[in-house]
Length: 160
Image (tube, rainbow, N blue to C red; front, side):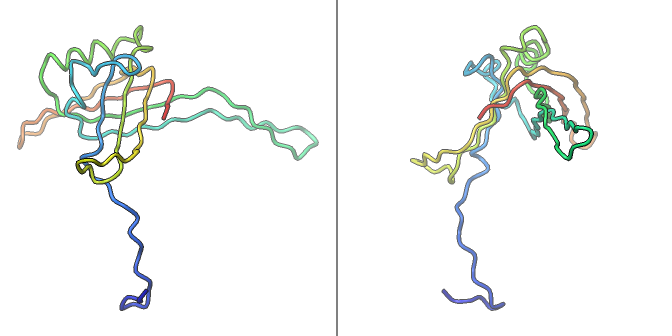
């Protein structure tokens, strides 16, 4: 293979994927239907993290360190454009009710490939279980009058 004009090897093409191959779905129960048929509910961004508590324990007179595994927890932030009222109310009723947390699932899926006809790339899917709405912030700007919403949620388990 020829070197480029800077004397370096050209990079190998590692593959591609299309941004339209990602989707966020708010579902009722594992594998259940999405809330009021709303795929994404005009979702603009999604960020989530999943952590486990780990304590370090030391023994007096020893160099040994021990790890004690604690509980797991997850947090997710979603930014959306407020959409049709029936979908919005169904979402709040489902995800705002802590008593039905065991039925609330947030699913993030991304297919591999360029999302072309016949493309069956494996992709990846993250399912957040036990999702509960913790906070809501609403904002609007005068220049576009689009009402934006920022949601803070928590969840109990992340599965792939």
